[in-house]
Image (tube, rainbow, N blue to C red; front, side, top):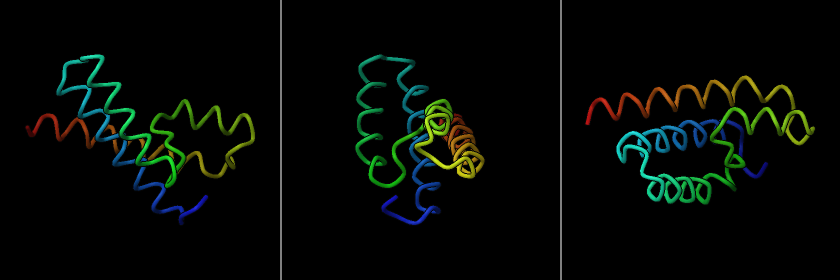
Length: 92
């Protein structure tokens, strides 16, 4: 990776939060959701690989492209990001 791990975890958390927030705010509008995902992937790709989804993290681990020790921190970051995005939606 190009940056230290804690930046990767932060990028995953904020990227997931932003994605969940977009999905909820636009009520699933496919164009807004796809544009939001595209922006998130462009921003987080160089920092964390742009996983945003625990399933992608699992697939990368199964293909030996990510160390197994990285699963738990990525998963916790993505879960926290999902909860943060939902709380932001409730706040707005």
